[in-house]
Structure formats: structure tokens, C-alpha cells
Length: 56
Image 1 (cartoon, rainbow, N blue to C red):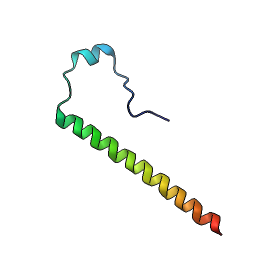
Image 2: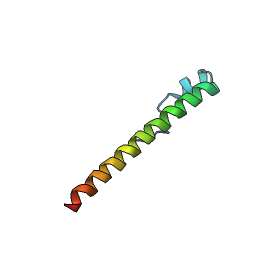
Image 3: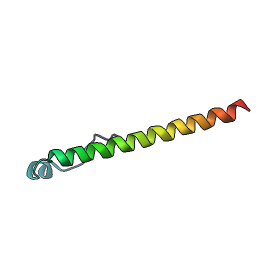
Image 4: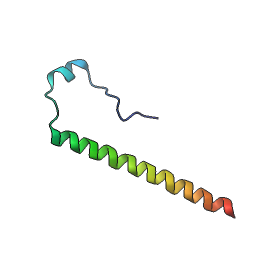
């Protein structure tokens, strides 16, 4: 499973780029949370549909 928290940037890039603003950080976190919720909902729907087919 892919980690959402891994960073593949080069050290030079990390040291020369200015830090994120609070607004940029908030936007990144909102996107991560939205993606996580979407994945969890898809898993729940898949699990629920599997349960329906097992009852037959």
C-alpha cells in the first residue's frame, strides 16, 4: 500500500524551496482527507455489496 506521507523530493529541493504557507498546508490536508474518505466509502460499499450476495 502506498504511504501518503512519503516524500520523494530531493534534499536540495527541500532546502531551497520556501516552506508552505498555512493556507497551502490546509489545502493539502483537505485533499488527503477527502481522498481517504473516498477510499473508505468505496471499501464500505464493496463490503456491503459482498454481504448482500452472501445472504442469497
